[in-house]
Length: 375
Image 1 (tube, one colour):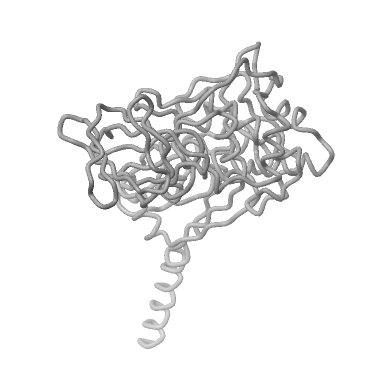
Image 2: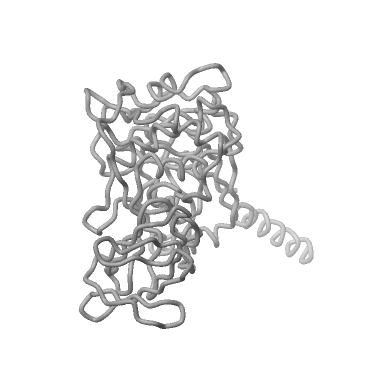
């Protein structure tokens, strides 16, 4: 009897602990890739494959808008590199100051007073100039050299190069370029050049409109060269198919009530885009950035996805939000799509409120379109 009692107690102990041991993993089932606002690039691909033109595609994703034409030429200033020293070649001149040799590599450094000193690669002093220093490019274009953590910082660029002090020290290398040439360097960085022409044209118009409606102007430039703005690869990013899409839509922009509007876009909607205020928490609602059905987004490899991790790993990623040990994530508000707007992180010692974007960032999710299960 004693042995039987011991075995029974052990069995009951295993039964009691089994659920806790089993509920050791967080499984996230989701859809989409990106913020889900405005145009889905894969959805645009699907529409193009079904015979829709770029004006239809843009009108579908940006509610109540129409395609209009931009008045006059425009330029864009793109931050290419931030470094203690800026090295470049392919320069033609310092306008109004002196000619430069396109075959020579020049190095710019910053003086304490913010002025820019320019030397040749051999160290010969060219001169010291007030900031910003503008360098015009030759027919072969300016080649920016070096690397600062941005893959686009080492390549060839049309237009001119502006060198000015960076906010945190060192110098910024900024490409001042015609809007159409800028878009040529963007489209293939944002959409595969092999995609149908109408999908590439929709991308070109969305990128052009985004460029003229967003600016980091207070920092001396308008756009980053990466996903903080749009992926811009300069001449290296130009392809015949994307060049054709840019040329075919030259000057075309998206307007709402006659004015150009910010045209957010992302890779994959998951089947439905989202209101801006539900994805960028705190942003004001915008009539052209409303949730819409996205019937052909299923062509994306990220239309549906699953991410798994242990509760321990999830708890570490959510450090500061978990009281005690992580038990589960409870969604309390979703947007017009199933994207998470607000949620609770439930721990053994209490609950903490958070948002979908915070969960996405902390847990490394592709999108806030997510369902959380603990098993």
